[in-house]
Image 1 (cartoon, helix red, strand yellow):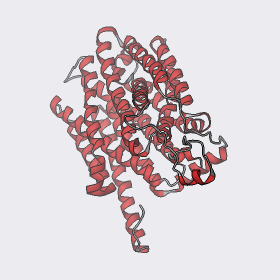
Image 2 (cartoon, rainbow, N blue to C red):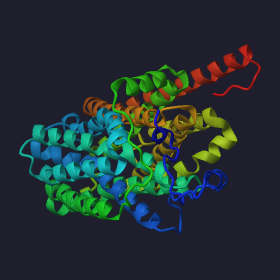
Image 3 (cartoon, rainbow, N blue to C red):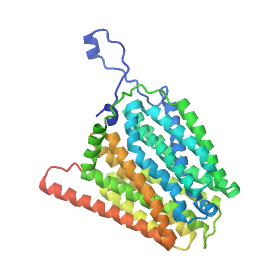
Length: 434
């Protein structure tokens, strides 16, 4: 396994050794980026903008599904494929993209990914049919897979360990801001000029972000190319999938995202129809609820300290389920409160599960994280599609039913983990690692 995949530094800039004795006794200078140092702000802003572009593009049609349904004369279950195709493309390509970034470099893969994604984004407003629109969105999602596959690896290699959490936090903040602002902007623009102009605006914003990203991101100094040998990648994937704990974490991430994807794909239909009848701009603003998720994700570490990982997952699942049930009420304030609880529970559960993957994997961490992201976006695609089908068949109650089943899956898997831990403790009195 290459050092890059472990997040370890692969190169340092040291002064030329005067002698063997001097080089052996003098520590090498760490030239990696650190807050306040040259290049750190440029790097942070570059990756923040990459995160904004990625998630604004990825979910650009989600708030617009009722309008897309209206123009093409299709049901929610068909229009939802404009979201599912993008997240599905990302899920399928995130692992191959992680391998390409090991060979050709993080900056190169991220630049190429954004270039393709924004180019497709400019074409999306001109899609003549739903089939063409779905195909373009699938290509866009596949291209965007190069961002999550490469950004965290770039940071692990180029940023000093003590600054790594902050740097990754800025990238995640860009993801959150992009996902939220993309939906809000499209909602208000579409209300005045239609969904095509709305996604066109997002495309133009993404082009600007991509250009700024390429100009700002410092040239990597610590990357060392790895191997593209399929057997190396296959061995890492096989090892991760053989780990029972990692399998449970992948499933939990997928199930949480099934809830979230289903709810936010269908909520526009729920709120534009009776008894609410909200205009498109207001519906788009509902995604400001994402700010709650930013807070809950940031407190997930504290929950784990107080409740343990499984306790935090139970709490996240319970909060999500309570929000789903509350959203059934025919009262707008209660529906909004339900969305707050769903969002808080989802982001907390996602933060707990994703961080546990990094701690559990002992090698091939880039591939372990890519597998989690793949499961996560498969869950998003499944939730978008199945949630929309359930809504078409049984209304909002159908979508809620799908979400409740997914939460029960989270609870069941977590309980299985608790049982496995108890059995491991009985068979080996030494403290269990999981």
